[in-house]
Length: 124
Image (tube, rainbow, N blue to C red; front, side, top):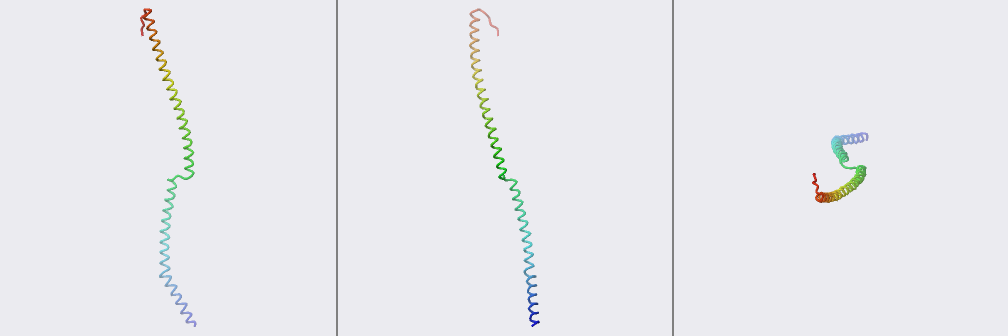
């Protein structure tokens, strides 16, 4: 009976050794290789995500851009109003200049008529 138990233990030990040597050790090596490969791939993917966060705008970035655009809109609107005021002032000055020029021409004609009637010679 002791011999039978010993044989069973020896067979069991041999089976475990063969199983370990033939299947488990190569599987462990394959798993280590797979683990290394997966770690390398995930590291690359993590790096790509990190770079994408540098390129793409985050929620905070978009909020900041919206605020800046709001400020820019106000500035552009104020510039448009100021430009309209300047254009109106220039247009008013042109009209006034035209009126003054016409009045000056009329005065010059009157002066020449008076000088002709009075017999005066005008020098320019």
